Image (cartoon, rainbow, N blue to C red):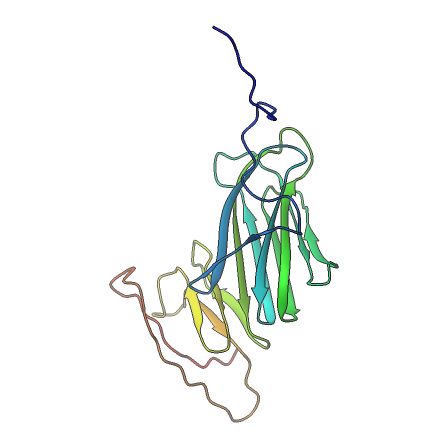
Length: 206
């Protein structure tokens, strides 16, 4: 038989996401978080995404799942096209933490570090918190948690044994109060991850 070349192809996997900021793949928010998965198929491949920030703290995580060989790099561009932040560290996964971001539509570019052995799969996560809020794991939680949301709604995921005994293990989103103050919140939903799983509001002195 005859071997027929793919028209316009190079024998590699077809591109899965747009390569230009003029036509990005719009991320869809679910449970307070933007997520996507992709593949960097070629050394020069760029996967370009867009998302809307309501302002505040922003977290971007690009993590290659096993057995991906991707040595990733990530860039964040402001609505005016200005480069806001970039990560291309020594690890295969890359992370951006921006203490405060203005509201607007931003572009994210995921690409390879630049070598032929740096190609493969990745998972992208974009989370945000309102101004003056932060998030952290307390204690030895094992798998790291995360938090994201707007001024009206938060989504928190965490591990750990809970808030018992002499050492707490949990994830929370928080803001610092100075002097008199109060926090009012309603727990809408909670997954039954374990018999002792709980969600609620607390005040801590540090």
